[in-house]
Image (tube, rainbow, N blue to C red; front, side):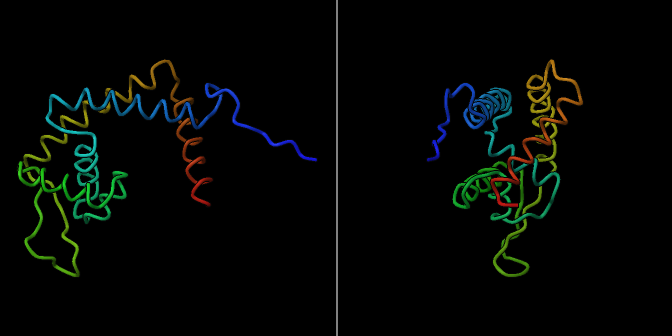
Length: 148
């Protein structure tokens, strides 16, 4: 007869503590981005476009962990504010590749500096080796749950 194992105390459950960390990170980023008039999703979109210009709505949604519908709203708002631009018609298929404008690059730089500060605070007291180990462990968790 096998005895089923339970999660046990939530404070000792990796998933629970990971969620706490994710919420704390989101809240800290939100506080830093608010003076720049950006949400975390808007910042994520700008950061992705800064690193990979020309991404489509679907690619941005996957990269920012939001639905396509939510990303459409994010992109529309960023476009109205002059931070990104998209062609009126798709150069191929239905994808509208999005790029940062000059104002978008400027806003991204300020936001990226602010978010880097949050990441520095999050890793305070950890050595570079510990931070690298944490990153590797989290990447392994993602691979394990994604099935590969």
